[in-house]
Figure 1 (cartoon, rainbow, N blue to C red):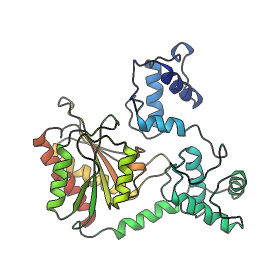
Figure 2 (cartoon, one colour):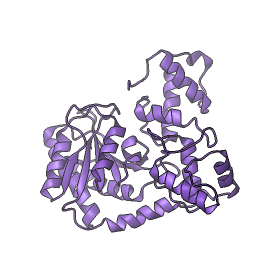
Figure 3 (cartoon, one colour):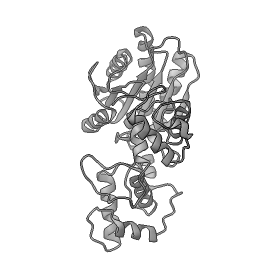
Length: 333
């Protein structure tokens, strides 16, 4: 999709501004008439911060998708498995309620996939309803009557902690998905040197690296996440390299998470990679929760690496070695 930013105008900006207003981000009437101005930029950044998105003021695929999803409340529509999967805050609310009652939907990602369907059917069986996997008004009302305590750790989080123990062992033979991402979130692959370096280092350590796209291949983040899932990768590393040599900030390692939930395995992997990258580039970095598509839609522990200092082939060699060492520690430490 097109990336919208400060200075753009047109009907798409009117739509974006109205969605922001509906979500409680007020815009002056004089500044909500289809021009992406400073007030709109401020509102977009506030929305991104609230949703654990990259705070850059850009309306790319992740921010636009979540602007749409944020408009759905549980009960607004009937939820069930379809293709493409339904997404929205209503799905996330359903997942949270099921999880709190002991019916594990998997990752609380706001995507109505097979895990959510299975959890809902099990709930329906337990309350004596037809287990059809359809969250209509009757099923939602039944859920609400249960008064689930939604601020307690869910089964999905506890399960992932147990799975983290089970995947420990040798890196050798493990299939590692490598995503050559893009800093702006568009469909084009970023500078490929770091991805090649990481793949080479992982292969040297005995792993089986798989690039999720070829250089220049246009694929959305969702399509690349689907590839990682189809491959059955054990972990996924998404690489976002800023090629601006003047940007000498430290690395950022992100794992799936929002204010309500997170991936324990993803967090541990991100911690280890960040530790190695900080040593390599000699800059302090940061660890953060993020709901970007590559972290949200992959079914394995995943981390997104943003590095401004690894854009040259020489620097990429050391960066690939550092990331590979973090991956090795994840499996063998």
